[in-house]
Length: 287
Image 1: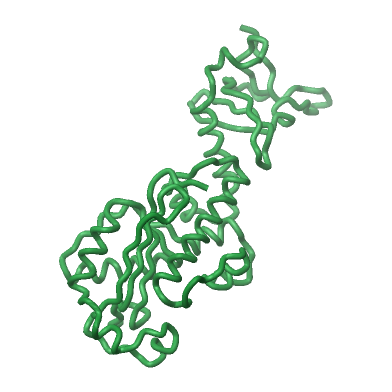
Image 2 (image 1 turned 180 degrees about the vertical axis):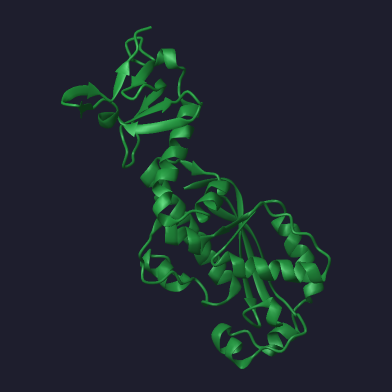
């Protein structure tokens, strides 16, 4: 699966759970995904002049000695913000990582300019609802994604999160016929309840099909391009398409207000029983 624009997957290791409670960053990894591959990365330990709790060392393997020798936050954060640039940002449990990014940037008077945030936890919940856990390690393992390094180290976590997000994007491609995905579509999915995602994506994909469709006169419709709905509305045929998805083949059509709709071909042309009489759902209008 290809992303239409670059995405930077980020992962922070920290001394605590929240910057509001004194937590500081101790390590960062930022991996730039272009198309479907990681093409660049920024990885560094960070000296934030903070004591590393014992349980953090036990969890991450990051020791006090390691961060004491690391470059200071005042050096790492400007380089990190420059590396991210104006690309979309992504993270597994993105609210955590973005909160630390913004808090550390604020300390130094930096202004991150990333183009929105994608949360792979939220994506997984919406694309694969009902799983027992969405923690990075178990979720990735259930999809055959393995850690190359130690879990709870920034670079290893970011690599696995990148593979997971690409896997989710690939699933969307298979279900709805996408060959590439705009990162902003993933941001939109993040904002929806899981039950609303299928209908949203079907309509979104239908609009893409319509935008890419050949001009209406070239479609084999025996000269008919407009239909009347049995309730009276007039609709214009945009195209007929066959998709590798759960709603193929489809009819894509435009309503009087310009909105794009899609229906399975069998539904579009079906007969209805209205007041004891058979009525076509859509009747061709002879021009």
